[in-house]
Amino acid sequence: STCMLNPVYDLLPRMEWVRASGICQSPSDFAYDEASDSLCCPSPNYCCPNSLASCAHPDAVLFDAISANVSRDAIAQLWPLTQGRPRRWLMTPRSMRYVAGVWRQAAADAEGAARVRTPSPFHARSLRAPPR
Image (cartoon, helix red, strand yellow):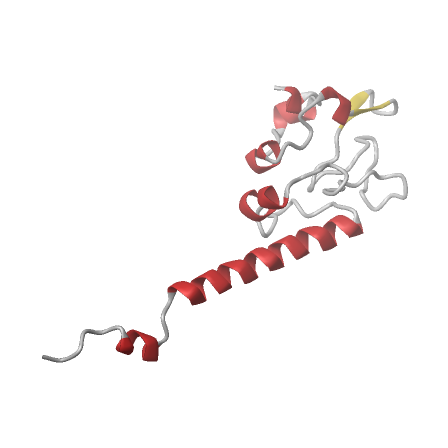
């Protein structure tokens, strides 16, 4: 699989939601890091290059969901709302805002759909057959 171009993924494979979102799927998504002599592709919970000890480093490349063209549907339907330890979200600030907005909209849409499907008690009484 081309999403496994970095040997690190032999030990810690990409998560299914990352692969299903189309992230790091082609060789052009990966950049060579001379210091670590490895390829790297940032993802929502992984920064590059591999040679950096911290994603807070000014040279760290963080994932950008907008530049990566990740669909709103993929974010709403595939991405976990939280990252289990030791993982955490490692995205650009604009990506964090974008992803949060997608989740807020998905929650509002789901809430609105639930309201439409759930009749109010008054409405439910009015739907009953009249007494005989």
